[in-house]
Length: 195
Image (cartoon, rainbow, N blue to C red; front, side, top):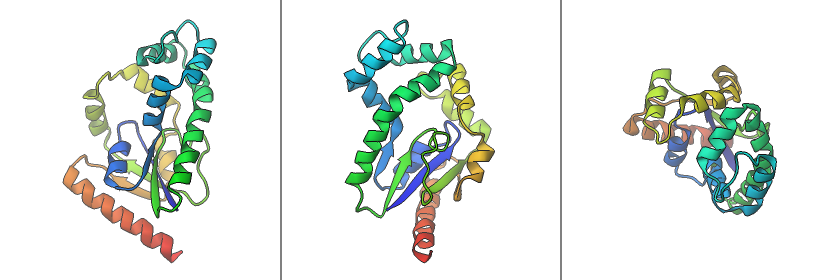
C-alpha cells in the first residue's frame, strides 16, 4: 500500500486535495473532532490535567482555544494526551485499507511528530501566502492568534518542502487542481511501480 502524506501551510488545501485524490483518506482533524465529541475517557484525562479550562462534555472548541491561548506549551500537552487515541484510529484505518493501492493521510504535524516511515510518499502543497490568508479569513471561527500559535508548532515550509518527494502547486482553481491531482496520482503510481 502506498501512503501519501500531504504537508504544507495551514490553509494550503490539504483536506481539499485529499478529497480530489479519491482514495481512502484518514483525516486526523475529523478523528480529533469525534474524540472531543464522543470519547469520555479523553475528556476525563483533559479535564483532570486542565480543570480551569476543560469543563464540558462534549469538549467545546472555545475551551481548547482558550487553553492554548493561555500558554503555548499547552498545545504540546494536549497533543501528548490526544495522539495515542489518534494513533490507534490510524492503525485501525491502515489495517482496514491494507488491500488498497493507495491511501492518503491528512495529519497535521505528521513530520513534526516523527510519524513518517521510509516508504511514505510526502507531497508538499505550495501556495501563495496571500491566497492562504484569504482562505483562512473565510473559515468559520477564524482566529489569527490561534493560527499563529499553531504555525509556531510546525516545521518551516522550507523544511517541509525539503522532506517531500513531490510538490503540488495549489492555485485554488478546482478545474486545474483536479487535473494536477490526477497527474500526481499517476506519477506516484508509475514511480512506485518502476522502483
